Image 1 (spheres, helix red, strand yellow):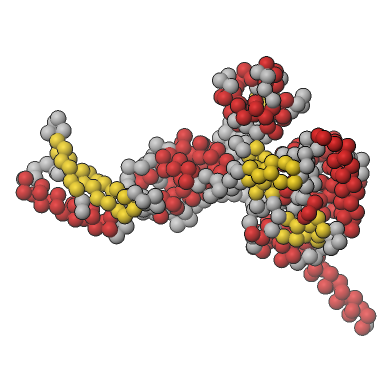
Image 2 (image 1 turned 180 degrees about the vertical axis):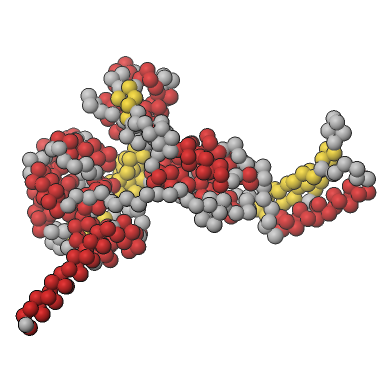
Length: 483
């Protein structure tokens, strides 16, 4: 039953605060709903009492049927609460980290607007601002010749210094290298923890320009996800960001970047002069089409030399707040078995011999057991069986693969490509050779065939044209024979 509290201001204005309850939350607390009602001027005492009772009954019925919407909650506060509820393991650590970074911008622009007052025009104005110069951070980086000196003055190991700075030890290792660089975001975090202006510690190289349409669409999807939950929580009547109420930001369809067969052969030739570790990494990316994180999650028990297959069972990710984590693959279909060629397995045998020799040569420096960080933040000690490790025999940072590829491309004056480009290359070459889309989709670990078809529509159309021409040539040949 509702309760009512009467308040009279100094100016004599009367306000009634009406409160009732709406069941219980997941933690067992009663959910409180409230509203205010101010009698219009000119009402008599009897009229006020009669209308107050009508407002109470109407409010209780609104709450009872689930049509009550709290108009006081601000979007920024609700979004922060949503992020808190969806901390890992609800969301994957990397996803949560990305959402947290995006919501910082979202809250700054839209956080003070009440949920019920948020309109599509507010979102459109925000997206326009994201396109402006100076917003983009991708491609920006920070370098420093002072951070390592500060660490040494404090007499801290890289691991302890990283913990003090709130970043991973891999980030500290990167900035301590003579040619090392880190993200501007990490530099800002380190400077804040060390209570020093970022410009005093780092030299910032900022990439000007606005955010891409693809990135802006990610912002839109996050906003829509948060508002969808707000509708389920009966805080707003509908989601103003869904397709029924506004158009999502347009994204120009771009063909997935890939190398053609001639370029791939050239890359393979160049790899003959590279260290076997990096040669094996590149061959696996090209011949298997696996993701960068899946590559660095591989262990020797995942390599079946007899049947010439590899098993994808885990992935490795770099998360600023946690370090290098080990988690399950992206989705259920990402758990998969991939058949590889004799060439690939010949190289894997050669690399295994190198790996075993390295293990022997490192002697006491090799860690037979390593500690890995799981997606929920827990730590587990496991046998050290990773194919690819750092010099201290611990799991590699996935970004180190990207860095090596970037330097390899620059050193050999190659067209720009990334580790993910080699995944697209793998798929495109298979489609061009007539491999079925379901087969390609299974090898890539896509959640559905539709995903594969959308990404590689150009390659599919090209393969279809080749098939059509092949059939025409064959039929012409048969007709010529009959003549």
